[in-house]
Image (cartoon, rainbow, N blue to C red; front, side, top):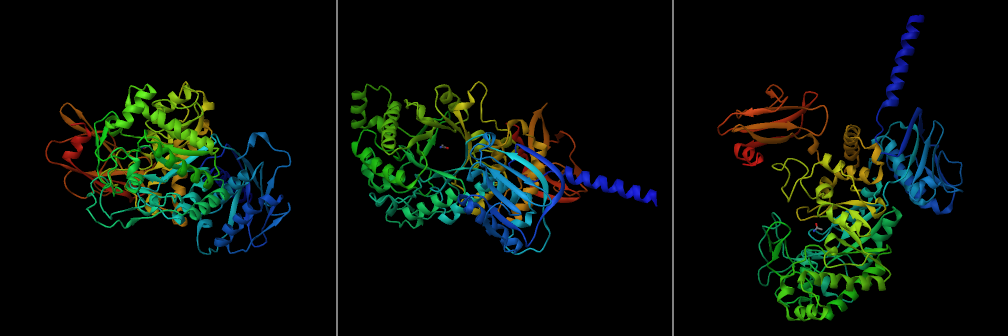
Length: 629
Ligand code: ACM
């Protein structure tokens, strides 16, 4: 009997230890988390309390969310007696700052404390992630709703944790945008960069310039790969597009604010302005009245090294005073709609060839003593900054705003790698890091013969490895970073989610969690748990981590094949004999030399004896290409 009891106790002890050692499924990883024994169980008698009236909104948001899946009808009451308490600290805890929180769960209660609403909001997000994934269900689920007993202390590493959405290349409805913001908020992102204008569409109503949306928000309907689409035909109706009314914008701004998200609107000038020029051709140098909103045509020749030529004029004329009257109208209306301190003015990829030939621009250069047409951009940006300042706003722009000079108060968004950010920080500018190399969420994240192709590749692990403070740079200038979703190839919100996740999970951790806690092996386990949670939430994501990463190189005239995967516990099976691979075909273990001849490689990953991820099929040609041949 004694023996039996002892065995039972040992088993109990082991299972308790195991329970405590399970990785908590939290993204981004909190600063400190201590797991204790026991669980809190949410049941019908739960009450959410809030100790200050200003926390009512967070409390009500929490009960609204909990009640969908639990069906408990939990209420939010002012006070401090709830089984789930949202408490604003009487004496602010300096460690927590404006966005930090503590969360203590025991068998009896969950107490979230913070200095500010934002902290309570993020504590709520952590609480939701600690609950079973079924809490994300849109339907009632009958189950035991437990959360592990923990003590979490958490606050962000960076103040700017952003995601950008380009609504020009494809229009996303205000409901889509609000869903995008919801997703951001769950991951503790606090800055939504809204890319509202570009060559392919002007998306924000400007009441004093109605043609911007009557004309600029609409383009001819085209399908197929961006850049390969046919030019608009004369007289062809422009039926594809959309825009946000100012009431829509106010609604989205309000929605974002309730979720601790500040919106940074972008009006991209002087380049990327074909939609504005289609609406008001007089804003350009050539004043070509046949200019149309681009449906995704290829009008730029790229020569490498960031040099290019735009074959259709898409830049505003910096020498025309009417352009500044136009910009004054635009930015004044934009400034009244968005309460945040920043307006993003673009500044990227402006082709100046038409400026160089324009008599007005030549005269302006002479007057200003400017020798290089490139430097006219500095003049233009400084005029724009003046307009923003008059409206009480700060200028942020892509790293090209450094070309031609900009005031030290301007904030620089580093996108062409991190070099612009380093240069800007060394000059004393504030910097937001969003380099193509780590943070471009439009890039292909998986095998590029499987995922729709776009400019370049960016794997999850690379995103996760991002360090936003470059060596030798004073960290105080790095406000934070963001991920950018350009939508040339992204027509729907569901596909936007596929491109954003899981990479935005990695970036959320890069921008929120302490640098010291970064751990890929631990992260990837949590990623897979988030997959299950996202399935319940009906949020799309890419499973590229299950696809073999296939590389080749030349070794003594032969092709050497290497295959690896990002996810753990996978086996790769492959064939080169035109049979379909399965778990009985060759298993990849180490780099191998491929035979000569017209072979095709087929590879697929398995886990626990079952196929997972995509079958990848690469012909010899492609295998050669990857070796750089
Ligand atoms: C950019 O990607 N053109 C900022």
